[in-house]
Image 1: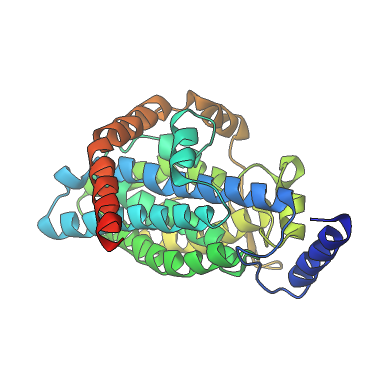
Image 2 (image 1 turned 30 degrees about the horizontal axis):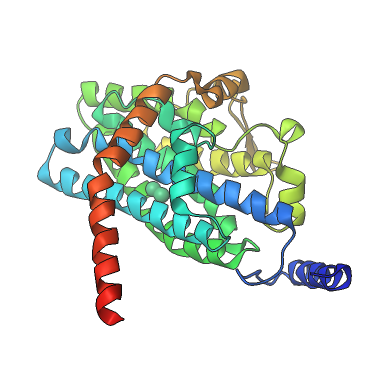
Length: 314
Ligand SMILES: [Fe+2]
Ligand SMILES: [Fe+2]
C-alpha cells in the first residue's frame, strides 16, 4: 500500500471508531489494533477451554442426576465459547493451531482464576455465581467492542453466562439453606473464591499496562477498577440473600455514592499466579496438552475426510 492510501485507510479506521461503528475483518486496521485483539481474544478463548477443567473435575461426583446434567451442559457451553472465540481470532489472520501452540508452550496466558482447585461441591456453586458472574461484568461491555466478530460472539456468550451464574447461585442457595455442614461448605467456598474473583478484573488502573490504548480503540469500555466496583455492588446483596458472609471486614455500603467500599485483593498473589506459581498452573497445562495430543487422531481423520470430499467434488 502506498503511503497515501495507507494514510487514507487509517483515517477511515479512525472515523469508524469515532462513529462507534464496527471494524470488520476486511477493513484496514493499525497493526497494534490487530495484535491487541489477537492477544485478547486468544487469551479469552484459552480461558474458556482451560476453565472446563476445574468444573469437569466434579461431573462424575455431582450429587444428583439433575446436577450432573446441568453441569455437563455448562461445561460444554464453555467449550462452545472457546470455539466461537478461536473462530473470531481467525478472522484477524491467525491460525487456531498456532494459538493453541502458544497456550501449550506458555507464550499466551489464560485467566488466573482457573489455577485454583475445586475442593468441594460448593466450589461448583461458587464458580458459577462468582466466576461466571465476574465474566458477565467483564463481557457485557465487550458486546459493544469495536471489532465486529468479537462483539457478536459476546452476545451469545453473555446469554449463556447468565444461565451459568444462576445455576451456581442455585447450588449455593440449596447448600446455604441446608444442614449446618452444608452451610459451612458454602461459606468456605465463598471465603476461598472471593479474592481470586476480585482479581479477575486485572491489576488496579494505576498499574494496568494495556488499558489506555484499548479504551481509545473501543476494545475496552470501562476500566478494571470500575468493573471490579460494579461486580462488588452486584454481588454483595446476593450474598445477603444466600445468608453468606463476604470475607471482607472493610466492606461498607456508602449511602451517598450508592457503592460499597471494599478491601482490594492481594495483587502480589495475582502476579505470582500469572507467572505460573498458582496452585494448579502445571496441572492445568499438562491436562490441556495431553487432551490435545490424545485428540491428534481426530484432527487427522477430519482433515483426511475433508481432503477426500474435496477430491470427489473436483
Ligand atoms: Fe464461558
Ligand atoms: Fe460460563
